[in-house]
Length: 315
Ligand code: CP
Ligand code: NVA
Image 1 (cartoon, rainbow, N blue to C red):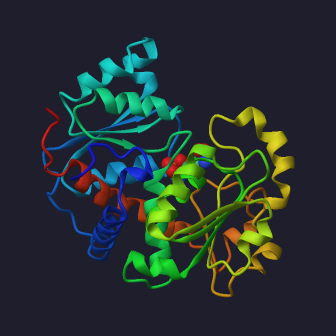
Image 2 (image 1 turned 180 degrees about the vertical axis):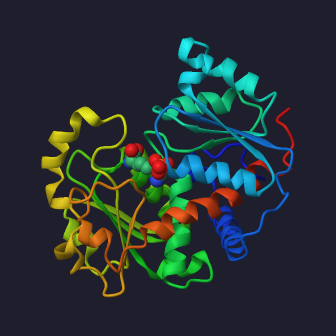
Image 3 (image 1 turned 30 degrees about the vertical axis):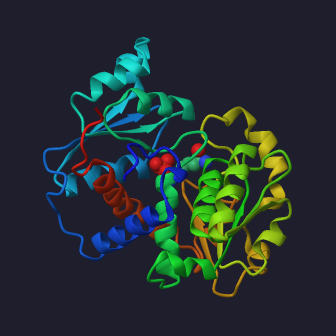
């Protein structure tokens, strides 16, 4: 049975992920408007800025025959103190689903608890699961893999901050049985709760997930090298301190020499050139970042069809 909400990568099973990626690949191969979500509306609540998530969800709804409404927190009564619980119960009367980009993951959870309709995580401080689905599709394309089982042959390295991206990747790798190594400075690893959850999932899937301190250890022989900003949205006051702490974690040509000769470089974007990744690597032949950005659209469609397509309302 489908989960009602998609707040965490771990809300999906390995089979769900495989299904979403297969549908996304099919929709990408023949990008034609459909009517699969005709008459359905998605509300998109943004507490933080967005380019890719905002536009890919809106275009995905349009191309599936539905409507997307952008609801910035500023324009909602949330700004004046209306509770998330009341907002959720109100919006559920109009919408077929809600996507939220929230500062606090707990806000997305409260919204989901009170909403009768599915709530989709469009990024929180803890996770960014829709991005990781697009990342997985991109890796499958780069290595011409027919299904998610093929991903098990690859070594995936994440370098940098143990943030929302790293945490959703950790769970995805653990669910799918992948080999995934994150290299993070001490004190900036993925939260213990995610590491523990990944270990539990990995015992079932056979995944080899670990967190190390040395970026070269993670990247040596890696087929996929992934990085993200050192300072996430909401952490701006720590930017200077983080620039110093993360210096050794820059994805540059020297680090890439340790990777597999056929490796690809991913970044969820937006990127800070010459901070977490050099311009040369980001713009170089191994980089698939704009293909990755495009895949947000195709994956969003598959996610929307799964969560908004024809499900019964919660009783
Ligand atoms: N990768 C990503 O989520 O980008 P936006 O912040 O532009 O949505
Ligand atoms: N870790 C980044 C991802 C942006 C898509 C952030 O949360 O700002």
